[in-house]
Structures are given as C-alpha cells and as structure tokens.
Image 1 (cartoon, rainbow, N blue to C red):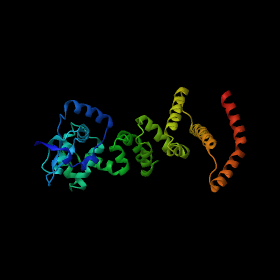
Image 2: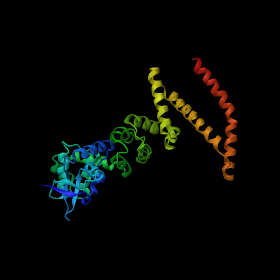
Image 3: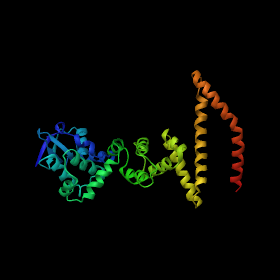
Image 4: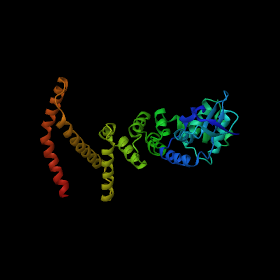
Length: 305
C-alpha cells in the first residue's frame, strides 16, 4: 500500500541500523532538489498508527534539508517483523551492507523472538547465512559498529583488515581493535592507509603504537609510505631485525623533532614538574654524546656499504 506521511511523524528508531554515506547523500540531495523524491520511503504502520521507517533514511534526511514536509511512503508488511523480512528479501536486488543485514537479523531474533531456523525459512536463506550475520554483529562492540554505520570507518577495512588480526593471528584483543577504530575513525583514510596503520599498530611494537595513540597518524603514514617505497625500490624485504631497527630510528627522528619544538617553547612549570624534568633532562644529556658517537659510526658504515 502506497500513501503519504509527514516527515515529522515518522518513527526513526531503525536509523541506527542503517549505514550513512556523506558522499552519496550529497548527490541524492541534488537529485531531490531538482526532481523531488522519485522512490517512496518504505516501512510499516505501527500499532499506534505511526509510520515506522525501515528504508529511505538518506531520502528522509535530504527531504528535511530540502524543506519537504510530506513524503511518499510504501507499506511493505502487515507487522514490523514481516516488513523487516520483506526488506531483507528485497535487498537481494537492492543492496544492504553485511552489517545492516546483521543488525536487522539480530532485531528479528532478539526483539521479535524469531529463531534462527524461522528467520532462515522466511528469508529463504540457509541457517549458515543467518548465523554468519549474527556472529558478525556479536563480534563487534557497539563503538565499532557505531563508527561503521555512521560512515566514520569503512566496513571493508573492519572485516578484511582488522578482523583477521583477531580471528587468524590472535594478535589483537577486542579492546585493541576498538581503540584502533576510535583513533582512525573520521580521518578520511583510504582502505590502504588503514591497512598500513593497522599493521604498524598491531605488529609494529609499542613505540609505533604509542605514536598512533598520541594522534600522530599523518607522521606515521608518511613514514610507513616511505618505508614501503624504499622496500619496493630496494627489490627485497628487510629482515625482522633490520625492520625493527629502521622503525626505532624513525621513531627517534620523529621524537627528536617534536621534542626540540616543545622544549624551545616551554617556560617554567610547577615545582614537581621541574624536579622530574631536571632528572630526566640530565640523564638524557649524559647519554647524548654516546648516542652521537655510536650513531655517527653507524651512519658512516651504512653510507660506505
């Protein structure tokens, strides 16, 4: 049944299950401003008579921006569970992401009380299809799924770059994955950037991880890209020991640059700060000459090799 509803009367509770895309939404807004809403929003009429929106949240947000008060609305089920089932079946042709599918499958199970077998039967899917989606959602924290659905972190990178660190190598805990998602979300990073940064974060040792935690993503990316370029130019991968030494030299160089600026600008400080700073600065000064001597010898050897 097709009807019209006022935008301010729509129940938007399922908006949290739908993935945002700023780029696609901008394009859609231009289209709606020029041609209006061509495709009706989809959902179900609730028991109170309020229209519950399931599909068309981008169109709704664009309608609000365009000042459109009434939108076309297509009822796709007699009740909420049936409407969700119908939307998931339609998504065979009209794509929902894996995470969006997972969120609605979980809704059918946890809110509407459908079993895995019932969901599979009504969707005409296998039980394995349903279980994969339930397991995908359960493996994520709310923070991670929220970052993905809000468009701040790409789902592809989570599934194919971060998840293997937990599932295959066991090198990352759920909390560590969440921390990486948090520090890299909303930065406009490409999937390749995320691949480089995640490898450094989970395999690069504590010094590199500390740099990333401090928010030095741009510096880390620059160093990682340069390292990758040098590896390609050299025609051979470095050994683990050589990689570790290169990373430590990169970190030392970065710290020296930042510390030089900070020390030059710093004035005074509390008594407790001055006491600790004096001890640390004095200890560092005592090691600088030895470092200069060793580093100079190392530089001469690699330069002449």
